[in-house]
Image 1: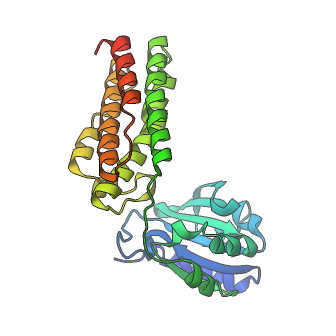
Image 2: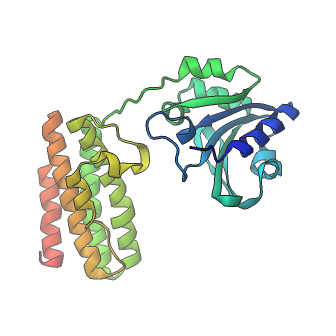
Image 3: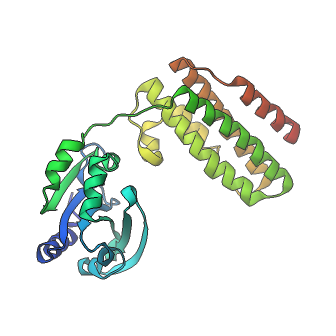
Length: 280
């Protein structure tokens, strides 16, 4: 497939060669992966080491690479900030900008591990960051699982917020209820889906639910189709039940797989209150 970012990368490298304050340009993400490769919708993810970070984040350096249509800055890993730019033709370039010292610390301390461990490519380097990356980043995927205490805490947290969301529905606070059902509780559900998949199938799960439709089993995907609510009271109640049922099933099977305690009493009490509130 043709590299859609070829011209932008050349402009970035030309800029780096002409500016002594730019120390390194490192590509990460889909453009460097060997498993799920870049496609027509992929962006270009870069780690930048520069003495003058503000020129990248708030100044005009990104304007040298193309016609900017949309741009904003957000917090990123290792205390750095990220300039996200959408150029003409929907070319999406994400630039995580560090001082050289910040990037060195991020690599040595392992902060950069999770964005580099599926692959990286050093495009420009005046301070031998490649050696630092090669020494500190292993291009392999290891998925940790929650400890029993962390697992129990998450299940109880989930059950508590099932009841909390129910009360918001009954009070008529539909916005708050929906944000709990389809944001807070879904984040917990995602963590349980990941833990279940790793423990039961040794699945390579991706962060933040990426490619879930590729790695989650069919039973999970079929159940998820009923777990999200419209902005409507009856639909929220239904989604709350479906979310609770899927989470509880996965939590119970995970506990059985790894041999830890399943907090049945907490789940049963949440069930009891839902029945009282909604008559189901």
